[in-house]
Length: 193
Image (cartoon, rainbow, N blue to C red):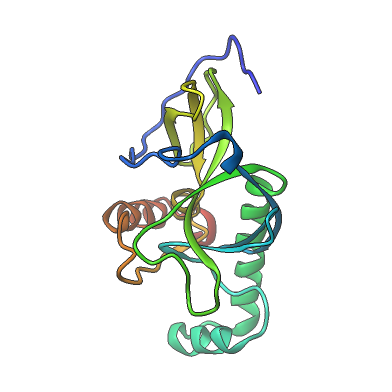
């Protein structure tokens, strides 16, 4: 996708050092076939991916919903509504999009899901008008072209649709994620309204 003639609108954001394209070939890109909930995706290769470092509210009645309700004092119905909003936000960004995965220390969780940082290619060799609540990265794709990507994990925090959930040893972006969540809370974005 080319976006010629558009100017870059640079908005405050954190830059993340790691490139999701390091060590990838052109054939490594996968497509999101389903957004299971705000922090879990299904990919074209059949894998389920749990986003590292973030936790969105539950969108269905389950044991975690009941634990979250007891822990926060919020009603299950309220949590489910927030979970549906987070899932819809994620779905709008990733459904049918090509993504690349970046891993941390632990590659799978106890449920067998891949644990990953997810990057969505916006465009190659282009300038893009940037949405303020998205976290963008400028990098080089496997063909050596300039690429603009949305860093999904960070975007969920920045837009206020997730909380930081750090599970060692996967802590690569913990400090940056905490800062993004704090900023979203301060701005009353997303679920922090």
